[in-house]
Length: 124
Image (cartoon, rainbow, N blue to C red; front, side, top):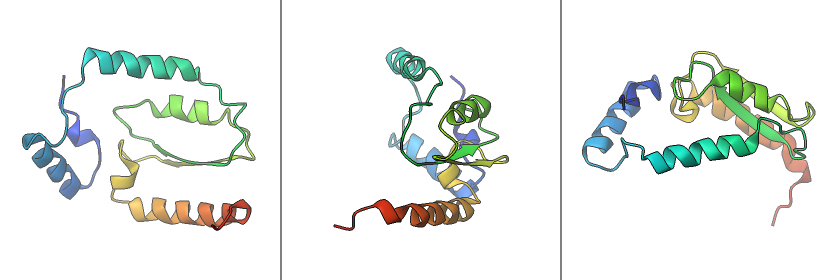
């Protein structure tokens, strides 16, 4: 299987850390057939229809994801009722949005979304 580490993030420091972790066997680099089968089964169970979803969702999609199909992710997220979904698409991002060079923009958007939805949450 091709090493996909370089397609996770544009952040070179994080990529170097990922590579170092792999060399120290702290990070998996191979997927088993069982893992692959489980992943396919989980995707099939979703069937792409989340129209019955009833909770607010903040979703971040990496537009240049080389590991997952961003258009499939977006299509599935668009089945969530529009009043419940805030989908942010970052066209240049690779797979790991929260490790990307623009992560501060993403975290800021997420924080704004969380603050806008905290009125209905308990503060135990």
